[in-house]
Amino acid sequence: MLLSPFVCLLQITAVDPDRKAYEIGLPFIKKAGVLHKIDYIESPALPVLDKLLDDVSNSLKHLYI
Image (cartoon, rainbow, N blue to C red; front, side, top):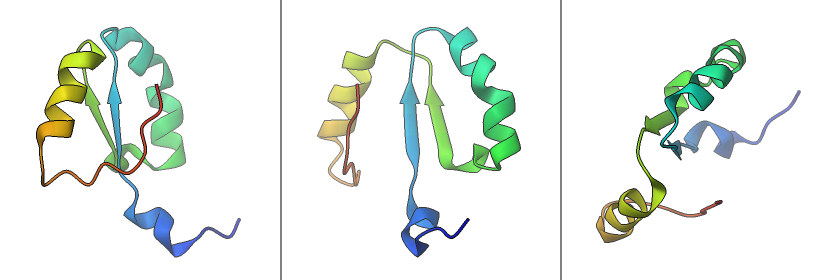
């Protein structure tokens, strides 16, 4: 599969209060070789989103809820 060179620049921040949901997907994430691209935060989303939006150094481009 041919991927855009911009894919290597992508970083994902995953926010979920249920760590079990993340752990279910973890084997697939590791198999895909993208574990280093995912920052997992165990928390309700609103406090984290407020913090991400307040951080001027954050380059948040897209948000999916």
